[in-house]
Length: 184
Image (tube, rainbow, N blue to C red; front, side, top):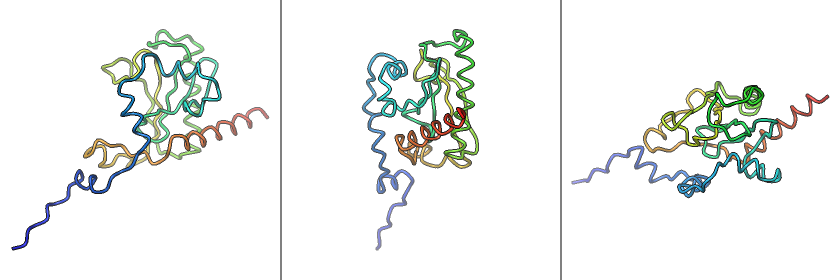
């Protein structure tokens, strides 16, 4: 009598064929994050560390960085330079630059990554899902039709197909190129 081989499920298939994502180890190891605000720390670091910190833009009142633990490739965070938690606490110049940077970064992402849409929003407070609760920040997430597959459903894994540093270099080059063309 032949024994029947057990049916493969998405979970057992994942075990047989591991998905290597070595950059995720930092997320696991950062479970006990140091005190303080990582956005403020980025701004205090020398400009020479901007690539390491994934800091793309240092505006007059705001910043743009790649999200180190992205929902999708190209997931950006736009935040005021000032450590502030509430929309009502923003100064008019901060408010304006946040939206100007969001508009600019959507255009850059469209040219570099060619997404079919975007999710743009704020998570205000713990109940809304804010991981960083006391430094307001806007998320800009490029989206493609079909970008959600079985991985998050069955294995609690999100596949990001491009290294953050590689994407940083592409976005920084596009920002530099568009800034140069605006100066002419």
